[in-house]
Amino acid sequence: MSRADDDRLFEMRLRRSHADLFDMLDRLYGAHPRYDAFRADLVAVLRRNWQARPKDLKWLDLERDLEPDWFQRPDRAGYVFYLDRFNGTLQGVLEKLDYLEALGITYVHFMPCLQPRPGDSDGGYSVMDYRAINPAYGSMADFEAVTQALRARGISVCVDMVLNHTAKEHDWAVRARAGEARYADYYLMFDDATLPEAYERTLIEIFPEHAPGSFTHYPDMGKWVWTTFNEHQWDLNWANPDVFLEMVDIMLHLANRGAEILRFDAVAFMWKRMGTKCQSEPEVHMLLQALRAACRIAAPAVIHLEEAIVGPAEMIPYLGAGEHAGKEGNLAYHNSLMVQFWSALATRDTGLMRHVLKTHFPTSLPNATYATYIRCHDDIGWAVTDEDAAALGFSGVLHRAFLSDFYDGSFPVSFARGELFQYNPETGDKRISGSFASLAGLEAALETGDAWQIDRAVDRILLGHALIAGWGGIPLIYMGDEIALLNDYGYKTVPEHAHDSRWVHRPRMDWARAAAAMTGGDTPEAKVWHGTRAILAARAACPELHGAVPTEVLDAPLPGLFAHRRAAPAGPLICLYNFTAEWRHLSARWAGDAGATRFTDALSGGQVVPEHGMIALPPYARLWLR
Ligand code: GLC
Ligand code: GLC
Image (tube, rainbow, N blue to C red; front, side):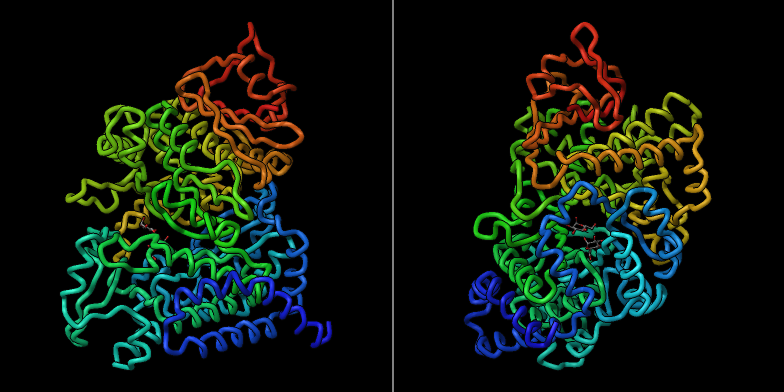
C-alpha cells in the first residue's frame, strides 16, 4: 500500500472512532489548561504508532475489520501461563506449539511478561518498564518472533497491561520521588495524612494481611503515596491527561510487537472519588471507552480484556453498558460464573447460581463476550451479595463463610484442599487459594486412594471445563488444569512468595505428567486431558456457542441441576449440568419444552435415549442437548 493510501486509511479510522474517543476525553480532561495541546499530542501519538505498525499486522487489522466476530467464534479457546513455569522462556513456547494445538488452544495469555521490579513483583504485576520484556524470559525480539509463530498457527497472544499502578522503581516513579513536578503529578501523593485518612474511611483493603491500608508513608519524601495493592505498586493519577497519553503510547507499542489481546489489569481502581470505595467510578468506563477507541484507530486488530473482579451488577458495565454499549471491553472475566460453580459444587444446589446468572447478566452483549474461567492465578473471593443470598432465603455472611470453610478443607464433609488468602477479621472476609484439581477433591481422594472419589474429582473438573466452554465467551484454561495439577506447597520455602498463598496454585508445568496423560490410560490426569480436549473440540464444532448467540438461564426442575439454553437461530442447544454426586432423572418432556428436538449430545456425539420418559444423568453429568 502506498504511503498516501496508508494515511488515508488512518484518517478513515480516526473519523470512525473520533466521537467515541473525544466525547470521553472532553468530559474527562476538557477543563485541563493544556487540553487543546493534549488533543493534538494524542492524534500525533496515534498517527506515529500507526505509521510504525508492521505490515503483517496492518493486514491483520484489515482481516479483523472484515471479520469483527473473530474473538466470539466457538473455536476460540484460551490457555493461561507464566512463561517461566510453562517452559522456561519465550523461546520455550515454540517447543510446545504442538501441545497447545493438540489441546485446541487458539489464544494464549503470557502472564505478566514485561520487565518487573526486582525481588517480589506481585507475580510481575509491579512493572518497571512497559517497553521491555522480563529479561528472564527473553527479549522484545523474541516476543515478536513468538507472537508471529503463534499467529501462523492461528493462536492469538494476550499480554497484561497494568493500568492502575507502576512499580515504584519505574522511571516515572523514580523521577517523582526525586521531586520532578511533572512526574509527581503521575501519581497520587499527599503532604500529610489528612486526605489519605479521609479516603480510607470508605476504601476496601485488597491485601489486608501483608499490605494493610491503601497508602504508604515515605519519610524520605515527606509524602503519602496511594498504593492500593502493595507498597511497591504506586497508583497512577488518571486524572492527569499525560498519564492517558503515555499509556496509549505503550498500549500501541505492545500492539505493534504482536500482542492481539491486551489484558487491562485491576481497571476498577483507576479513578478515585472521596466518600466511595474508589472502584468502578463512572470515569473508569469513560477511560476504558477512550482507550478502546484509540486502539481501534491505530491497531484495530487488537481487543481489550478487562479485569474487574467485582460483584455481578458492577461487572457488566465493563463489557459496555448504557452509553458505552459496544464501545468498552471486548472481554471481561465472568467472575460470577466462576464463583457460582464453586458455590453450587459445595452446596449441591444450583438455586443461587440460577438466580444470580439470570438476574444480573443480559442474554447477549453487543460486540463483546465473556472470558470464562474456573481458576486463574488469583485467589477466589466470594462475590455473592447479601441481597442475592437473601433472595434465596439465606445469609450472605454465613454463605461466604461456609464457602471459605468448605474450600480450605476445614468443613467436615469437604472434599477440597485449599488455603486461606488474606483473612480480614474486620469484615470476616476470607478468600481462597488452591488449584482446580485440589479444590475439586483430587488431592484428598488420591490420599485415601478411594477410586470412586478419584473419579468424582475428575468429573468435577470436567464439569467445570464443560461449563466454561458452553456458557458463551472464550474459555480460559489455566495452565495445569488440563492435566489436573495439584497444589504446590513448595512456595512456602521461597522467601518472596511465602507470604502470598496464591503461589500454591501457580505450580510449574509437569511435562512428564502431560506426556503420560496424552498417552492415555486410567489415571486422573489422562482422563482430564482427554476430557478437556474433547470438550474444546466439541465446542469448536458448535455454531450455537458463537459469542453472539444469546444465553438464557433455564429453570431446571431439579435442585442440583443447572441448565441454560444457547438460543441459536438454527435451533437451540440446551446445556445441562448435574452439580451433585448422585444420579438425577430429568423429564424428557421438560427438555423437549426447552427446545430439544433431536436428543443428540453435542459434547459426546452420542444419542440420548430417555427411558420411561426420563433422561438419566450420572453424577456430575454434562450434556449439550440438541
Ligand atoms: C490484578 C492481578 C493480581 C494482582 C493485582 C495487582 O488483580 O490479577 O494478581 O495482584 O492486579 O496488580
Ligand atoms: C481483588 C481485586 C483484584 C485482584 C485481587 C488479587 O479481588 O479486585 O483486582 O486481582 O484482589 O487478589
